[in-house]
Figure 1: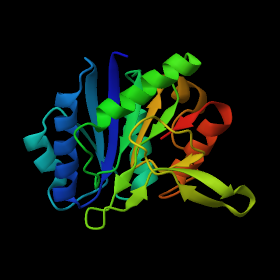
Figure 2: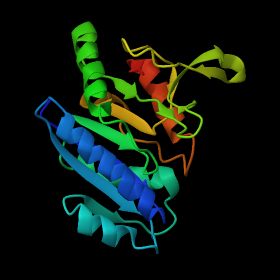
Figure 3: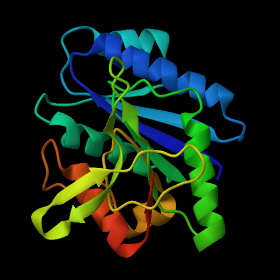
Length: 211
């Protein structure tokens, strides 16, 4: 893998957006692999100076402008569409209110290498997030307890090896080029939520999904 793109969208959460970018760039500095990173962020009409602050502190970020009606799924599609023009080896979806650990990129790419060894190709990988106050897992990979009723339970990271899952949130989600070539990007049928569930269900159906 030579290069990957990071995709974000935001709206009037300047401090959180800056914190997410700070964590991202720190993680890139700690990454042992020599991989180029490009960042695409869609600002969907913020009025709190988000775009200006990002351009000041992170001038290498590609800041794109939304029309104010994109919401999460539309904003992420907008960032992804721009990134696709440059044909990256992987695409990392990151929520702008997420402050990932400094080793999160390392762990994602370890999972990618695990899948390359096991399957000979890349897949889709989901990272877990924790509530800062309660330390309880909020988003990540899940498995169904009753698929017909749409019931599922979260898979708690074991800290040792990747786990196969059936469903995932895109707060932290890395999609390899193999996956994107087969699935594409987020479906246009979703405005805000559920677009990530749809994407991970597709990944599980036609290839593999790990968390």
